[in-house]
Length: 397
Image 1 (cartoon, helix red, strand yellow):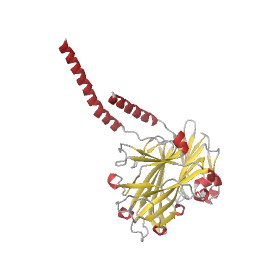
Image 2: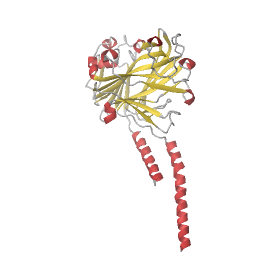
Image 3: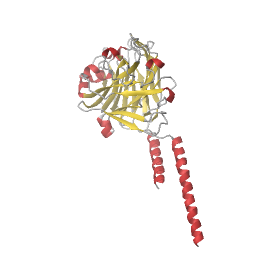
Image 4: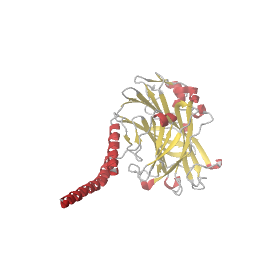
């Protein structure tokens, strides 16, 4: 009976997951919306802001990806008729409230990639726990110039890819891809994270970066600032989920969620989700994977300063001080992997969204295999039992 109930629950879970995939939003995307030609010269491919309106039945999710300062991704839940207006001259001058919604958003969540750390991991522990400041270099990301490599918009997805050559003392190829999708599914790129129709997926690549020559054992970490339209006295919660299934990300059995209080308690807040894995080669598989480590979210001393040169200051001005703003560091690489200089390549992929993250679902192939593997023996057992019972009855009569 237990096997029968397990199979029934498995079938119901898969059916519910497939039904969730029927949810679909209508995507409308604009690159540098209404930007004057003298500011956004399309031939330069330098100025990049993307606005995506994701229309639902009773609301709209607005995404703003700003790559003019610190790379930022904002997710706003709004009414169905809300529009966005940008005063480009004030925006490029980092003026407050230079970007405005026609109505106040119902909820806002987002992330800022604030700065890159390069640290010398003398103890080869992987984690970013170095306390000697001479073994750490900090590079604010608002100093990076991002060249647009591609922009794609369709009914199913919107994606932009940009690249920077770095700054003085840290040159190389830094690539960012931001994408959103009309329906829930796994992402097309390893680690194949599960995205919803209310989320943005961000992929970071550090390729052939020249690190400090005085650091013989260099590693990278990135500072991520989380911003939510929730009380500033609250805290983000880090939830680590374990799974027995690594079908979509071979060798990785954990998923890390950094959730706002509303997302954790009412499924209406914001979250950052990722698998603790980085890849050291363009071919992303289990043989090229290494670990990532994360610090606990902490409140910065000055939220206004931390959010300078971001879309959040452009929209909310000094009122960001009343929002829930915390920062964390994610470092790339684990003990014994040879440090960054062994392969000169590392990646990190994560999802930022509104609501609660979807749990990973089993694919149809796994469901069929599990059903056959458990169902056939169960069927044979039942048939064998019936045969024995019938034979005994006949013998007795």
